[in-house]
Image (cartoon, rainbow, N blue to C red; front, side, top):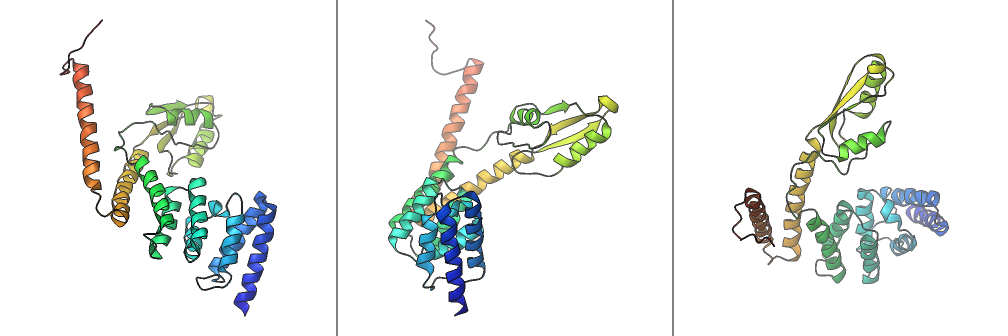
Length: 281
């Protein structure tokens, strides 16, 4: 059939690409894999699924790590129809290559949708995913002007990134050959939120005295806070699936109370009102 011919073509091209294991060939392989999925050449009942899965597993580093989240979800739906050996290798890839939370989630959802909640490999994947969530939900982020994940790419990148990473709220940048140059710099690099930093820029001055005043805003912090709350909700949801008897809400409350108590003790110590005696040698 036409579908089988397409299957053979895609798989042959995939094998040829992963065999050379170069960046260019891996990108070509990725393109073929995504084409195969998009055209439904490969599906749950396809006799070529096992060969397809093996070809992906044999690529080093795994081609899965280069895929978009939606493609990983589609590939995972094929993987979970295979035997435990394939499942183990898939989970190994996710853990060894340190998949992000979003990519790990779509793989785990495929396992759940396939009714494999009690499977050993599913629980390995669950523990890894839960660990990633817990790392990001130890405590509610406290406000700071520091934006440590900032990756400003453009002219004056070193100076701008140093400013974004630090605690200052406002900094003025010079070195422009005129107000037009300053305005162009603002127009090119500011105005939209890229997820790792947030600031507003205002050009001013004339001639060699032209400058840009960059002032951080709270959009970055609000996004961090929103992500924290989303991770908390996701942690509760996923634990309810795999450990329904675990009272995670109580654990979160206890950690929050402990942190609050610790902060209060620190404040008392700074005020000289600490309950414990202070011994000076």
